[in-house]
Image (cartoon, rainbow, N blue to C red; front, side, top):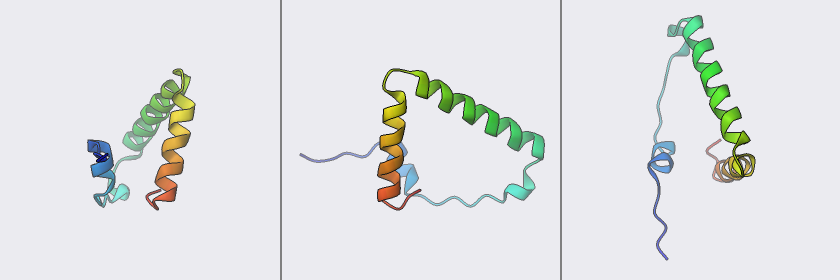
Length: 65
């Protein structure tokens, strides 16, 4: 069976360099709060926490996290 990669997997293989010192603190705080809210909501969904842990383990095993 041929494994296909998703857009997310393809993007994880790309490198993006961002100079976060150029981002105003209020923007960084808003972004962090939004991401945290999304992760919390995802984990509340049935199977969400398990899926997130599986993804983290996969990324760690591949040296991408």
